[in-house]
Amino acid sequence: MIPFLALVSLGCGWIQESARATNQQPAVEWVTRAVTAPKVSFHKFQSKAAKTEVSYHLYTPSDYQKDPTKRFPVVYWLHGSGGGLGGIPQVAKHFDDAIEAGKTPPFLVVFVNGMPNGMYVDWKDGSVPMEQVIVQDLIPHIDKEFRTVADRNGRLLDGFSMGGYGSARLGFKYPELFGAMSIVGAGPMQANLLNAPRAGRARAQEVLNRVYGGDPDYFLAVSPLKLAEKNAEKVAKGSLVRMVIGADDNTLPANEQFHKHLESLKVPHTWKVLPGIGHDPMGVLRAMGDWNWEFYRAAFAGKS
Figure 1 (cartoon, rainbow, N blue to C red):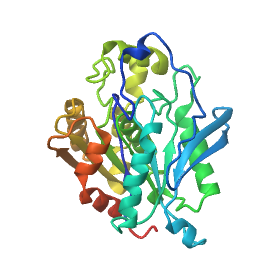
Figure 2: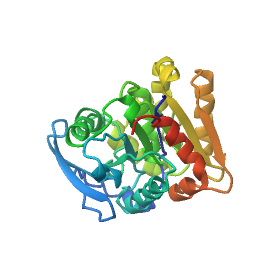
Figure 3: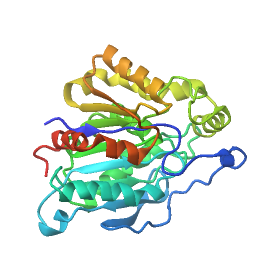
């Protein structure tokens, strides 16, 4: 079985971005408010990397309670820019409906706290070790506290918008941890952050300054472009990769370039453009229909 990972883009996630952030720096919020939704619970754990508590939400399928010996694969859902709390109930229900209908094997979903513009990367100034928190602390915590399939074939990275970028980054950097990637409406997938089709130059400059220390070379060095180049052979040998985007999404050109980049690196992957869909997370998930669950079944075959 070959596993699965998914990715997303800079731009609106579940909360629409506006001009609000240009003059105010959002707080570093390692612990968010709790979201109430069916089969979703709120958790905190102590992170060594962040030196503080960090929160996450967890979707648990019905089957988890039925058999106390059974282990489950895990989807790490990475939200888009602006923060992902508002989308948790919708995404959890989308997964739950498919599981209850038997369209996909059951799995846990970890809704990662990526903060409004955390970018799923270690900030250059060291103030926000986001990548370390996820890789070194969160994943071991989940495997310790819950009955997981604790290997790469049991971990799937998924997300939308900034979360797609995060999934691409983490998936290509750590193929030993994640066996599959689904790159959905992903970004920023371009080599130059200031060439941002959704964010606009002012907001892109703000993110470049705050997260990447104002250093375009650091942005490029930690980008999916460079990480794919570095680990193309490893990913090609053992990972399941797909790219999905709406035909009306203005991040399409950068995603198409990344698709061609993977082709040039000989990384096998599926490329799908959805007609009539823009930069809309639930729109993309619904438009994929049962094809989405075919991918999940391939990723999790024999793992639950």
